Length: 258
Image 1 (tube, rainbow, N blue to C red):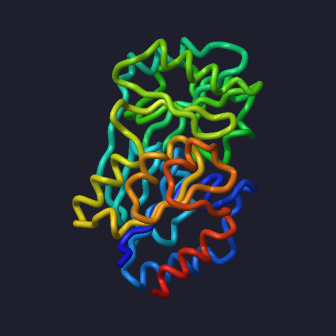
Image 2 (image 1 turned 135 degrees about the horizontal axis):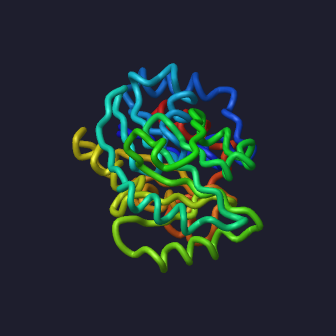
């Protein structure tokens, strides 16, 4: 019997057009009624995830910032922060023409002046934006850095960052233009495992959907796992099945009916 369904958001549940499927709220209500825990899992900021699923906060779990934040039914279950010194070093390292770092706390995404030039590109991912002039303007704990990369250089930038920092932080490609810097040891799969252990849910009782590298650990955790048809061969190799984003709700509805 399935007890938990986890899904990535951008490129997966929302598809490549980044729109919530018309029947999504109805399917989520059916999951809740059947006592199946719905777990949207994303590299998005917590505030963005909260906005997307505001009607269901008290009934679902949310994984945000690629696992740096986990909330369960409206209460913080897990979070991990990055030291301010490390944040400053990384952001200063990224002072190039094609990289734009967004500094994320639980509820606020901080934008330094140079990042304002790409503000329209990030509105879907970080909804509570706060403009700052210096690092001293940051007053909250930071859980991740989201890096928007221009010019198709995302793999090159990620490789350089990974080569430069090997401890305390990891870098993962989360989209065509996106790299997320998150605390070492954190990913969607690890925090999902924490939640499963707390609720005594086994792999046999889990379904997962994903499309990018940051979904691999989550896909490996589930008995029924689906990579999107547009995912890389590497991501597909970690899933049991392949589907289109447009098929996700039909798959979930079939699981619910069983």
